[in-house]
Image (cartoon, rainbow, N blue to C red; front, side, top):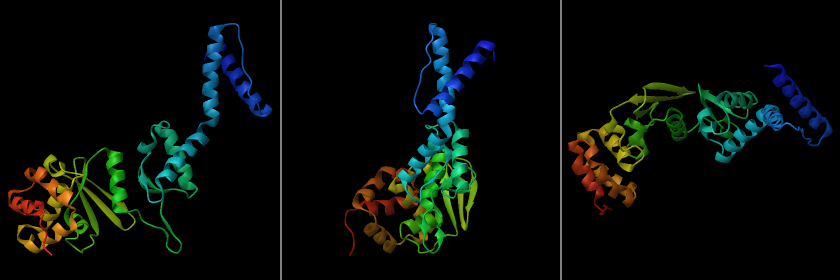
Length: 255
């Protein structure tokens, strides 16, 4: 740092301290426009340094509170507020204070609290959305979890499996284990659409267990608009499943 810059930097700090003690804003005035611009730029830097931790922390908490209890998130959600190191520091302070909870590396939540049970585990859906947003990947529920979501199975899986176009990994949060299993693009092409869930649920049951009774149950469960949309993604399903999907598209439901 050259002597001229150093003197301006010290002046800006002195200005900031003086303003704080006086409780009112003041201003630097210089006859040299270039020097005035230097002072202004350096003052803004010093001013931001003095306010930044508090303002960033407040902005982070405002976003968290806005989404409400149960929200699962990563530092990536706040990168429009400040650089990642500043966000990480704000999250750590709030976690240490007990306002937030760190679930895993780079993963936090604003926990739901029960009057007797204390902090509750996050929902699988909230966790999946956070993982998809953090890693910028697609996550498609599969296996027992997909069948359970559609009411085709009453079994509650000990391990929830999502197919993904990202890397395979395991995430353990308390008693919950979530497996992200890398798959082909075809298997995640309908992610977020009714067909994605239906195809994976029927695949889990297997051709011999996809009975007319189960198709009738799905007809009653799925809204008509969701059933009609299945035909658009029929090409993504195995051939043995095509007729079952056409039966689901039919508007008639058994009583």
